[in-house]
Image 1: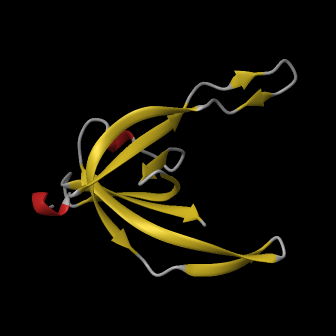
Image 2: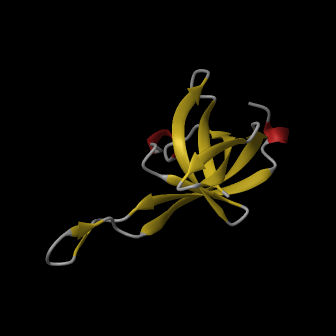
Length: 108
């Protein structure tokens, strides 16, 4: 990965421990995991019909350096970019521990 392309900042968040309400367990709140420099690669948007309306999805690839934290990221985590949360759809290693590509979708 070229260092010059990592010109954006992203925040990675992970769910905290489940909260027991006495009747059910709810997912824990999102908690800060890390801030990283990233390269952002936009894909074409697509529109899908949902709930009697049109919902646009914008898949975006975020490339970050491979390190002890980014190697633990899974699709259960989420990413924040420019104040928008992105649900991760795939997490892939780039090369031989050169980087990690995180593909996320933000609903608009």
